[in-house]
Each structure stands twice: as structure tokens, then as C-alpha cells.
Image 1 (spheres, rainbow, N blue to C red):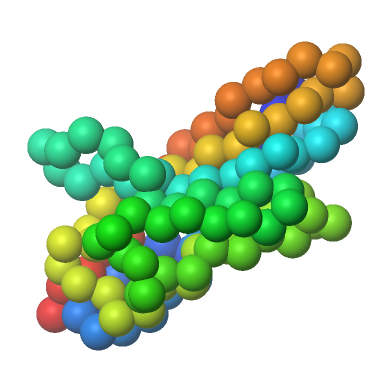
Image 2: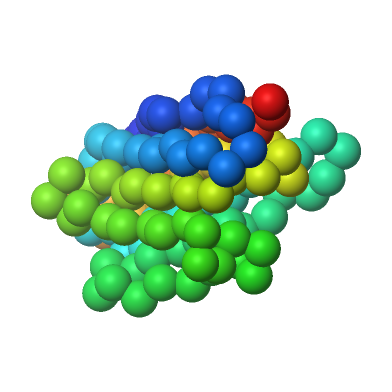
Length: 120
């Protein structure tokens, strides 16, 4: 089993910043990639940012230049630094990891999500 736990959500005013973190634990041989998704009320889940083990990153157009994803491979932890937050960024943010387990199988793991609310 692989577990992902997100931290750092909360209420922030427009223009403010938050930093999300997600720690992976369990029967992990290696993490190939990690990502953040979000789902706003009444909308589909969407990719926010992703990062590979080699450090390659990609971002949704809506957050490019405002959000930064980073990975601490030694800690199996991914971060999402969110700056210049807008009300449209309000959503539940989910962590995702592509994992090779200790039994050499692949697994797509998800966290339970953390709520980010941007409001004055």
C-alpha cells in the first residue's frame, strides 16, 4: 500500500500565498512522478502541476507563473507554492503519485485532498 497525505490548505485572501505539501509513504520502491490536481465545486478535476523524478515540470495555463511545484525525492514529498492567489483557485487540491512499489508493480496513488479557499 502507498499513502499520500496533503498538508497546508486553508483560507487566504486574494493576492495571498499558500504552500501545500504532500508526503508519500508505504511500500515505495521509487516515485516516478508527482502532481497536484484540483476540483472546484461543480467542475471536473483538473491537473494543476506535475513533476517527474528527473525534475521536469508542467503547469496548467491558469497557474503558470504563479504556482511552483517542487519535489524532495529523499523525503518522497512534493510541494506546491501558490502565489498571487485568486478566488478562481478555490478548490480541493489532490496529490497524485506514480509509484513503483517494493513488489515492482506500478501504482497510481491519490491523497484525500486539502481545501484551499481564496476569499476576502
